[in-house]
Length: 134
Image (cartoon, rainbow, N blue to C red; front, side, top):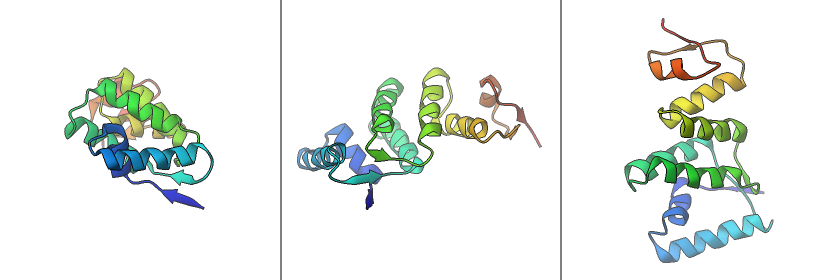
């Protein structure tokens, strides 16, 4: 049976800002890697994690991308839409856009939507996306 991992567990592990909690989180993730426990999280948790690492912890975009990429690539962690999230992280790393726009762009492509209604001109710079306004 899978158990859900919330944002703060990833934060304790990635930032090591609380030594005892870091140790417990590290042990939890080790159990998952060893196949002793099944873990899952959501795309919303990933988005919140990115936002918190950037805004509260003041990590650079490059550092955040590195940390998130490791989480998303973890085979023992189930994330619905993992392919979309992985592609969004790559797009986010290559373009000067926020992560949510990158996720939405990859979601649009993955689901074969022909256009995206938006006033956000960042979408104009993304190949395969046609932005339209109402």
